[in-house]
Length: 330
Image (cartoon, rainbow, N blue to C red):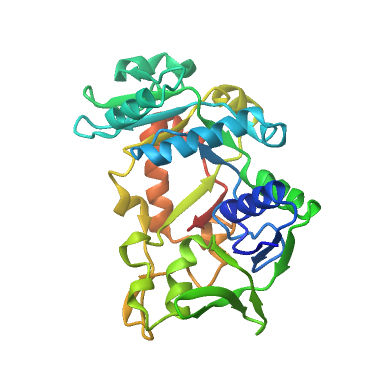
């Protein structure tokens, strides 16, 4: 009988556990996380997440299209998905939109994404972007097959469905991996428990670099290095009244200047990991701000950066969109 330990019960871990057990009922599947499900500081424990396939990487684009198909057709996921569409905005020098169109063409995506001009925004989407401060040569692409998913509800439902079909969920943070002769065959938890399995699957997101550094500090070839860097973004939620709900109900998800302002929109928390002799970025030890919290608990510089982003998208309309809760998402 195959055995699996999945470390981390966010979207990747929960989905992996669910599909492993569903496709191989005889397999032993253990899902580990630090809290009762779903973990409130996980990136996927959120009000909503964008579900799209418009990526530069063809392989990732193909995977996302398959995921989108499930969100739209599988009764289990359908109720959490809302086909809002997705708007990508770049300046004239970016190759992102061309790469997305090229990938969609290769994968025969229908319907095709729609290229828009800045002047179209005054009437498109019921005019809610009429004040968007665009340049005449900015480029815009609307992907009508994308949407948003109610992330926290979908994550909770996936974990519940997993346990119903036989996945074992254990609350015990993993402190290190058990690696012998180049093979990882187990984990050690903070309680001191050692668990073994044929397959160890890491779905640890922003905590991956530190976990591997703690587990094998003398094995530089195993370290994450530049392959994965923990970065955080500040998120906010706006509570709309009935009039605003009607006004914004046709709004697509929007990414403005995707990747062009990464250093401004996201940040790292770099430490020196003495045992492995390397600098790595790790999530904050204090997890309070990684959960939805009052604006006063978020540094003013992060709040102001987010306000600027809202104004960049909604122009003068941003004045009525006052965030009432924030979180830092890793």
